[in-house]
Image 1 (cartoon, rainbow, N blue to C red):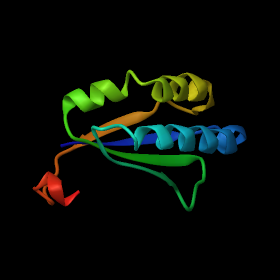
Image 2 (image 1 turned 180 degrees about the vertical axis):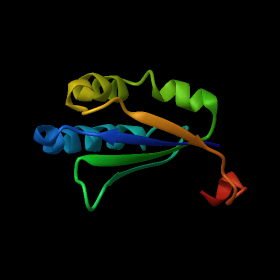
Image 3 (image 1 turned 180 degrees about the horizontal axis):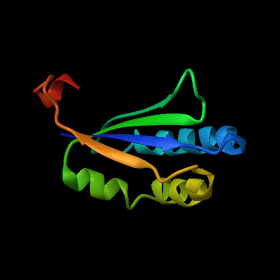
Length: 102
């Protein structure tokens, strides 16, 4: 399993547009055969901060995701809305250890 938490800080004037764009990306991503989770969270204290929690079955699934039309459209659409470059941090899954538990 490949788990990445992507931290995004959006310019205040683009928060609503970003939310709409990430929801569209979410709807496409969860249909991908290699995707196990794709959660989008917004910071309760600072609505300009988002966390995208991504879980894919394999490196190949991550690579395939980055070639999809919905991801490429999202990336291009939101590029200028970010207050700083997005930061993806990889994590190792400790539990559950069985992919079937996802």
